[in-house]
Amino acid sequence: MKQGFAVQQMLNLRDASRGINPWWFQLVTKCQRCNKDKHYIEKCMGCLRYVCRSCQKASKSASKTNRLTICKDCWGKMEKRRAWEQA
Ligand SMILES: [Zn+2]
Ligand SMILES: [Zn+2]
Image (cartoon, rainbow, N blue to C red; front, side):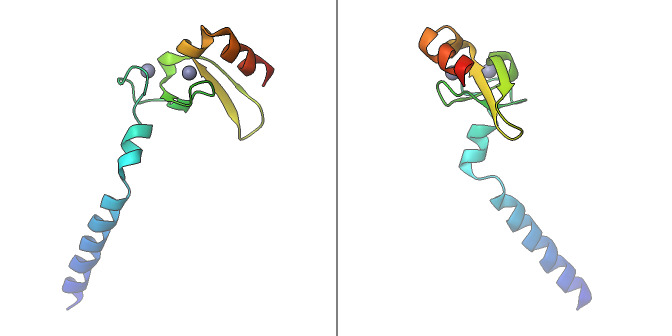
């Protein structure tokens, strides 16, 4: 009886862990600029894409919790670059 309970717990865990990876999780863990690197993904404030470290041109902290990152594409656009510098 006790073993049956443990199996049921494991099945519950398996189903629960399935729910941890919704479709958007895949998007966020993948660089939306080069589609390659999945590490150090941060949101670019210029184009609002999630970009990897090698696609990020610069980043700074506006506050303790708010990091401002700009990608290489937006760095080339004066408008967005200025917005990042003044932020
Ligand atoms: Zn990238
Ligand atoms: Zn950008």
